[in-house]
Image 1: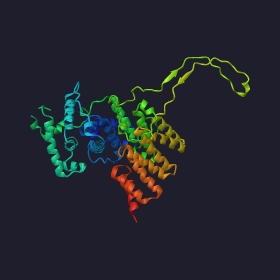
Image 2: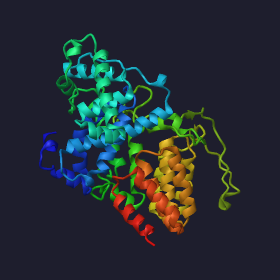
Image 3: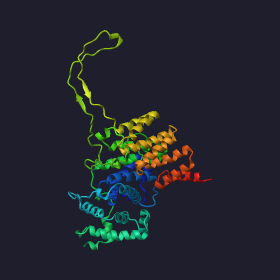
Image 4: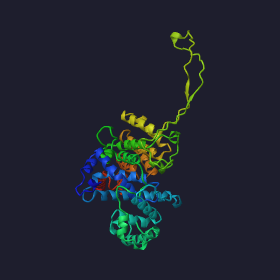
Length: 181
Length: 285
């Protein structure tokens, strides 16, 4: 992943944009865990994570030609993944009754502390209001500023600030019982 | 204490990297399946498929049909045959669950290593001697009694699976047998599997537009594809196809509207610049 995070654009990106399958495959392989993780942060429950991650990865690969190298490649990827995931969330909300959304089990057996911690964080996010969750993930995971979140979510600046404030309080509440993370 | 949770803590907790969750851990095979499907969905030809690469969506869309081929390939790669797929279906209901990579049985994504289930039952009947009547003119008068070979009787053949029909349609297309490809796509479009049906509708729309001079038929199919799933990898192709079909019909207003729709949904598409340029042309007096 270090190569993709380098300030000098990875030559594989241009190669993949020009149709080099091997380059595209190498990029996709490196990105897939990150994409799945971001999708899971944004999406309630595990059930649709891989479907949405796959759609997001397609969007990333199809958009490679539009990456200008003006920032970190991963940040560019994160924004595409977030956008794709939001589209899916809208669709899911239109199709699914809230009761149908699965509750997540935290599978902690034989896992690292970091994995367990993040699974618990995702489980806590699952209990938040969706708009608060989205604001929190965009801010803390994707690194967006409040104005960027406002633009991404199509919500007023003050609304986003409010969602972040309330979301943090709700997250603390949802994570209650664990002092050290 | 939770009340001491600072923004710094949250930044650390939300670290986004290549490992350690929060997505559920999956094995390398499942990850590879996601990558393979994404590559195909993005228009990169399968390894060893010739051509040295897909050229991304731009080539796929401009070339017409390639992305559909890729979608078909992706779909074939990630699906394993099931009895459900082999039943004749005539239900066009959108079934977004069919877009999933996960096997609903176990929640685990399928991989190339998964066993392929062949569900064509074979019935072997008991041997019994038979009299073969030879009916060629030269031998009409010479009835020859021969012991019959063991008779293997198969159960009535199930309806072909959608992936087989799509592969056959592709072959027909490659052979420039447009009518046959059209018929096969229509067959798949009537099946229950939404991903296959949508793929077939978009492919058939392109076929009608590019090779059968049937812009109206193309529009009908692109609209039907969008009605099944207005997002996802194939929606871009369908919306672009709609604009092209309206252009072919010479309906400038409808074309402008289709281009607006395309740009509203796919502003980052490799075709967006072309769409904007054409939109300007249409707006000019």
